[in-house]
Image 1 (cartoon, one colour):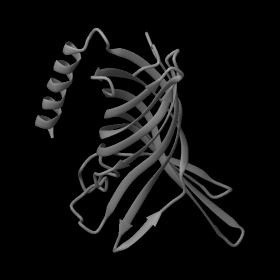
Image 2: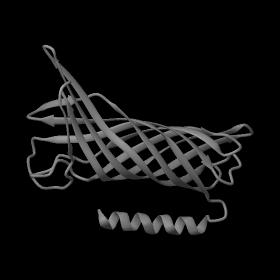
Image 3: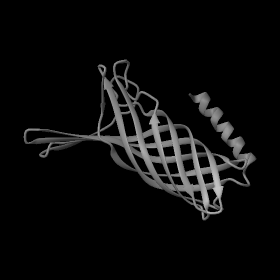
Length: 217
């Protein structure tokens, strides 16, 4: 994994140097609808999605007329929630995880005089910064910090390799709207048990601006 990240960084730096004149920087902010899927003992459980915030910075590096490489660094609030009622008692559980995510998107761009449509995909790597689980039963409320790591006593692994797909539209002034879907490929369940599996996914909507934009990405 470290070797792959090193090679990707070298490639990105070389690519950036070769296209520095046409490279543009952009900023994004938006909303994500996140969830986790768990599997234990052969039984899968997909809880309710949770709304979170995202914001980040990206670099758009053109390659020819229609293609570009777009790495980014984003803050993403992931999580899930669940609610169960037994008699007159309703129990609520919320999981909040704050992440730094690095997507490496390769885009196809179809430009026109009125703007630019783009679509693409690429790998992503997410690093968990902090997390908290909150329990409520209508009377009591408790919260616990999530412990990240790979050991049997940890709650969740802190590193998540994923895949990202994205599409959107950029206007001539550099303002753009994008939607993306990110699915985690890593098993985030810690410990040595092969029966447990935990994966993340989210759908995002973002508004952004490309500086020095001419509408063509």
